[in-house]
Image 1: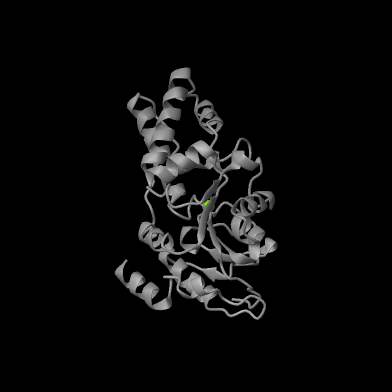
Image 2: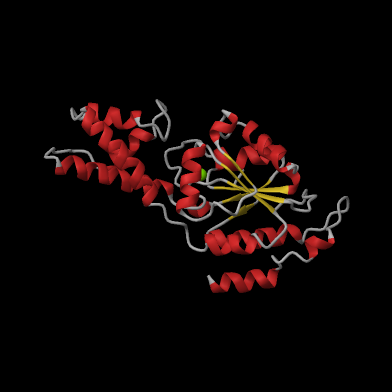
Amino acid sequence: MDNNFYGPLKAVIFDMDNTFFDFVEAKLKACAQILNYLEKEGNSVSEDAESLFRYFLRDSYGFESHENLRDFLQDNALFTAKYYKICRLIYEREKLESLKLYPGVKPTFEVLKKTDLKLAVLTDADKKHTLARLKKVELQNYFDEIVSFDMTGRKKPDLYPFRFLLRKLGVEAKAALFVGDSLRRDINPAKKLGFKTVYAAYGDRNFHENEKPEHKGDFQLQTFPEILSCIAALNSVSSPSSPRSPSRNSCPTSQSNITEFIRKV
Ligand SMILES: [Mg+2]
């Protein structure tokens, strides 16, 4: 950790996909269900779920676009209006139903909500998908602000969505912590703006991204609940220009509480 933190920490901002849950795994399961359906209809499909998933990784339409399904069906000479419609329905249903929080996420938020930290989400998903996913994993009520792609029109690593959310929270970057699984899209832009950064290494499935930025985050997490130790460490850093407030000293994320918490989960 470098020593330029002038806190006190006022906000923790989280990326959503692959930070709270394994979204790649959910999408792979959705792709497998689509192939099952097509095979049950009597088609022989030579490609596997990973091949279908790779259509979503192309730059053509975007990671969530149904056009990727259209291309897959057309490339395999399987396109009909009926198949396209049903595959879209299967994809959306299974992608949502397959979401499962990483261990300890919800208990960690139970601890965080008892602090005076503002909590927020910054995601490149659109609002409809964001709210549906947070509801599915029962996290929707923990956040002061949720900023989705359609609210800013720009995706990370563009700095604008980060600034937009900071303005909504009324917090400066230097008093905020950013948590995310992508070095390129989460950690590096947040660092540029002066956030403290936490790399959710346990969730990094960005194997398709060649660019590996140098900055690896001020902290790296192997499990989600370790975020509490990062917060406790930052709150223990004394600053000559901005002394810790009394309320911060009584923050329940004290080291002893965190140790006890981590032991339980
Ligand atoms: Mg992510």
